[in-house]
Image (cartoon, rainbow, N blue to C red):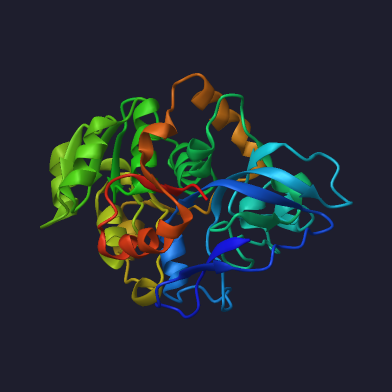
Length: 344
């Protein structure tokens, strides 16, 4: 099969012929119909993830059609159209048994622990625990963005942020996950302050309902306080940097909630956060790491009703041969607003 292969960290990947994946006994092989290009893939390419061994096929946001089924799989058959959370949970550890598969103790991740979906075929483990059937009429391109960015933003806003009507919500970073968070918060009746250095990204945030947009320069936290009349009830760092994580916490009103969605890797692994403010104002600080497959039906129902429309967040589609350049574009911001989706 054809696949994008990372030969060395930081070296532009190439498209080449590689062996097709072997189907796990408890898993499936999918023909990839669409796969998102995510900043997490960029971090992996740069060598920021210890789970990756080279050479490696990236890609973890995907939709596909089942073409092979392992002998232990009971719920899925050839021809099923599916997506999958980026965390493929084991289903048997203490976290999984508690219903928290997104923090599975023995998780596998396509594109990180295993070869991923920047390919014509991808193998997935623990299919009965992790696969999600696509609703009728949902395109593969739309579904490809659900497994990481949209589902992560959805859970961050609804579960950790507990966003309600009338709340002020600050979103720091308006890439794919940030725009997803804006959309979910607006659908909940919140008023959103969207922050991004890119004017194109700010325009995209405004188009999907952000009430205020800020350019990310100067004292961002003070600007959020002025815009909201005292600080946001909920603030999300959807980019992942020392500056945005700190600004997100300082953007909050007293007893507010910060949700860290963007990965803090490389030089940003251990940012000096304003914990004095966290203590003095009794702020809540959460991490958000995807969403378990069993939580997808509520989100999919809201998409089916038209309340949420993640198709609006897709900026462009490209072929497999263009995927390496699309991955590199995440590092310099040249990829444009919204999500880039690869159609192999």
